[in-house]
Length: 251
Ligand SMILES: Nc1ncnc2c1ncn2[C@@H]1O[C@H](COP(=O)(O)OP(=O)(O)O)[C@@H](O)[C@H]1O
Ligand SMILES: [Mg+2]
Image (tube, rainbow, N blue to C red; front, side):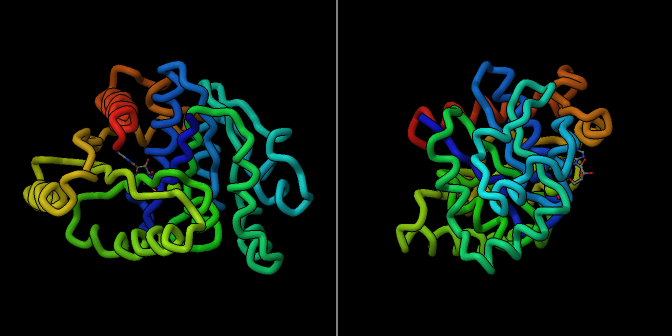
């Protein structure tokens, strides 16, 4: 079965891209067939995947009526990639003007992957919506800060609205606590609040603050390749394991 996973949170800097790239690499390390789609004009996931930005992006695929199948690149990290980049800003406009909503879902349908991981921009724009339409599950990376819950309610409402209109099978599958530093009392409190309010959704695996996760992209890779023994890499390998277990047990 194919799992199409959107990594989303309108807030920037919460670890979406780091999660997308390291989860893709961790799943690939378990010999799963993985496709990473970069839907962010910043193209950070493409950099971390070691693939060029602005080539073979969804903008070219949509605007030139190309078949996604013919434009998939491969990352040295062991998974396949549809890169992102600035030209996705034009895709945002194109989707709106040409009523192309849902094109990604149609294009992903025939692809044979066990996991398709989508990195999304820090807003609820057309690019994020395309990914929410196409996804079968959404993972929300969250930093344990005072305001971290603000904003995710509109994301959750959007997913539920699409679902109620039968436009998607997507559902919020998990909340992932990122950049965790348990020496910080506020982080600890917010983390415990999350467990209380979303007991089924919060993943047990905590992603610690770890500099190797931040360094790896400058080497065009994930922490899984860059330093597999680092706490960051180990945490994302554990996260991939937890994701697989949760999927197998029906979430
Ligand atoms: N667990 C972590 N430990 C240390 N640095 C991290 C961690 N997760 C993300 N970062 C760094 O924090 C910044 C924001 O993370 P990023 O994944 O780009 O967030 P987003 O995609 O949500 O904007 C980046 O510089 C990234 O390298
Ligand atoms: Mg990002």
